[in-house]
Length: 66
Image 1 (spheres, rainbow, N blue to C red):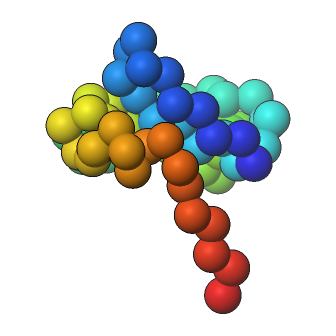
Image 2 (cartoon, rainbow, N blue to C red):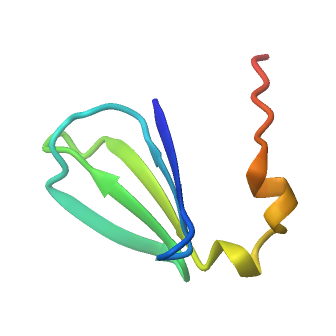
């Protein structure tokens, strides 16, 4: 998995694997899902993240496995 924060485009992107993306769909305002040829989600993009969280919260991420 790869997580990218792009300050210039104000986006946060979670890429689950490197499968080729064949379709993208905005499922909610500012939330885009990327799909592979099997219709599986391989990426999730959040737009306008500066309006969704603080810079401090973006500077560190906490991963929790349950």
